Length: 318
Length: 160
Image 1 (cartoon, rainbow over the protein chains, first blue to last red):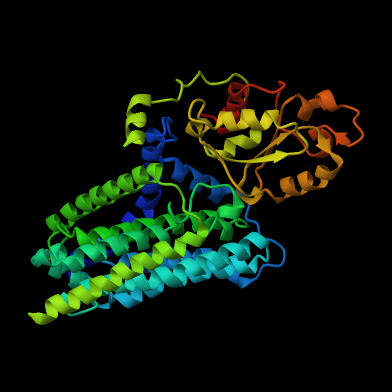
Image 2 (cartoon, chains in turn orange, purple):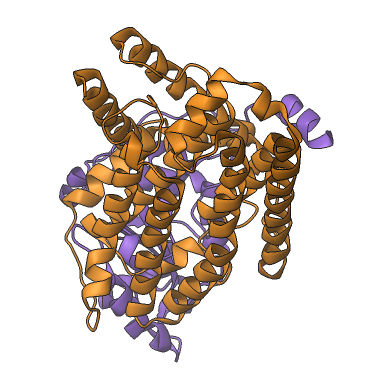
């Protein structure tokens, strides 16, 4: 494999790792401006991370290995997924391993690690958050799988780089009914998986309404920095996956430095645009009641199922 | 669509940032570097100060633009904003809240009651002022203090 392939993998990891706090800062800034605020600036999440890394680490009495390993595991699974998923290039040394099921399993592993850490603290809110996160995850993971399956049927493989490069060659696949249904299903699943409104409110400080935040209530200092960085990286990764699957144009498919540079700029632009749309939408939406969340997610699962069915019958006939 | 029109008509609600507040930055706050997570503790207040704290974080005063943010857990917090005279029942929870915060941590006493028990001095349920229970780094006098004063105290901590 060429040096460009390795550079693409390294670039994906660096862009997701270093860009995730900036994306969060950008989304908070967009939201602040729409709310009439001045906003803390795009760099604020990096300032938060720097401060948390300097603070004293705290391990609450009675917590075990699940609590201690979860932050590192969350970030590690996200880094591996960021290396695998085609964000900048579909032709990398690891692209033959970038299977859909593996990527979804890596994301699920991070979710489970954090849920176990929430249970490990033994607090009421930790357990409650873990139970809610598992309820949401049980509905979201199959939706992500199914909606990408709908795109994998015309490509004939579950290898994500192959799906993406196939869509670059044949844009008609994305404009098909299956492609549109899968887009809608995956968008809802990404909202739920990353804990955004209308499923969860990332900026809440009311414990009773929390899902993701409730599991992280006992973390402090460097561990909290890792948990927050992990959550921000997952948002960047999933928005990047969404843009790679449904707006794949500009992604590098060969081994040229120029294509990689173009892909980097376009990736940043696409994810920033998606983030701004999401932040603006959050101003208009309210968080839905917890008991309505399964209805929303079941609806998105149904869309994904319809996408797979449409994809099977429409492409199977030809 | 109505909301969209309101957003366009309102524009920016935040008032222009006042000049940096006078007074030296507390020694411990220098390590925070422009990012302060705030945990509010109501130790027995009449809720007047809480209303003013809520106003300090609203779009008009917008304390968030200086890097202060409210959080749900003392473990995440760098600053405890304590209001009210400390009642007997809240003395132990207050000590535990401050103990749960990681170093460097600061305690800001907000309002006259938190500083010297104010109106409630000598009450049978009052343990004492905040400084009698936990070490206090900054005070914000007033009954209740204006949001500007609370924002100024938070800016001295964030250094922005």
